[in-house]
Amino acid sequence: MVDAVDVTYRRSFRNSRRRGGDAPGNAGCTSMRKVILVGAVMLTLLTLVTSGAALGAAKLKAEYKLTTNVANETAWGRGAVKFAELAKEYTGGAVNIKVYPNAVLVGGDQMRQAEMVQSGAIDFMLNSTINISPMIGEFNVFALPFLFPSYEAVDAAVNSPASEKLFKVLEKYNMVGLGWGENGFRELTNNVRPITTPDDLKGLKIRVTVPIYVDIMRALGANPIAMNWGEVFTSLQQRVIDGQENPVVGIIIPTKIYEVQKYLTNWHYSYDALVLAVNKNVWESFPADIQQQLRRAATDAMKWQVDISRQGLKEGNDFLSSKGMVVTDLTPQQLAAFREKTKSVYDKWAEKVGPDIVKAFEDAMAGVK
Ligand code: X2X
Image 1 (tube, protein in one colour):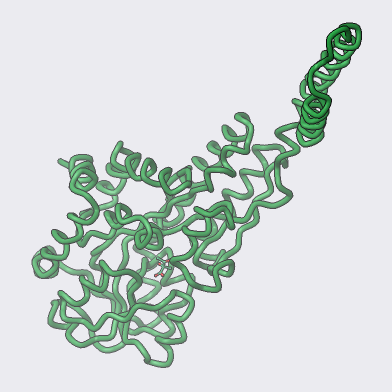
Image 2: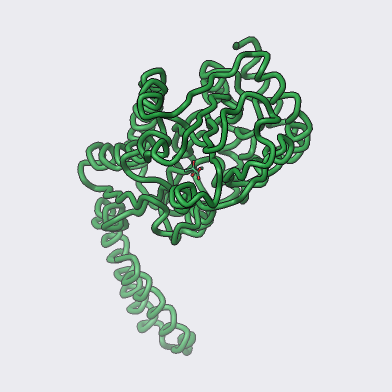
């Protein structure tokens, strides 16, 4: 409709220029033209007004794509599916979001998901901050070694202006943050021996994702190997790598990592948050009422998602023991040794993240154990 109006306008603009000004003594012709022009403008306005109601609806796509890095059976994947369901329900069926799991839209290259949402090739993502961090350095903050002592500390930071700072940065990359979900505290599994001291990690080939984790593993004496998530299970099975790190309830249980790993160490060394975000142009193409409903869907879905990723943590560890894994919980003294060894990595990456963001996180957690 807008295009047609535009064409009409351009055509009459072109014609009037081609015709040039009226010759002297041609006044009658001029007023006739004025009447026609005014009529055309009125018609244009009328068309715009009557089509106004349908304008927003006409802009909606038949399908919006949402990418995740994992299977829909994980707590993360279930959160994405929940958001799609609520988005449809709350917008009365107007917004149809399809979840594409396992990084299928990027051929398994998990770090490319954020770029694709930035460019608009993908509309939405429910993505780990880890997978965003190579593109946006500030997002490394969550991965700082031993930053978060507990879930209470995580909640204090995520529900504070500290996390809003990250959404502001996201906007510079043409994306709008809609909510925070949770992959969880990342715990260590391997096939060689129980890990209770940094020395136990010496020489073990541990799969990691991003440079900050490479630095952490090196500081602890391990041999880090960067690899996409899609290759991890087979690589563990074939013993190309000795271990990996991921959340217990979020990933290790639903993806059956226990079938190919013998030892688990709960060390909470790094917290993995999820970001629900949308391409900014796509976001701005939605009328205000749809935006409001999508925000509501995001809030409700992410609250639900965080709940399910925390459910059954204790039972989860019991389940892993029943599957033959040796589960080790570290004492505060044992943890201190790991923290000490990775202190220099914390300092190096806090600098890269930006001192104001790190301080905002530390302030938000001050006094929370
Ligand atoms: O690659 C991983 O380890 C995973 C699934 O946790 C992320 O996408 C960050």
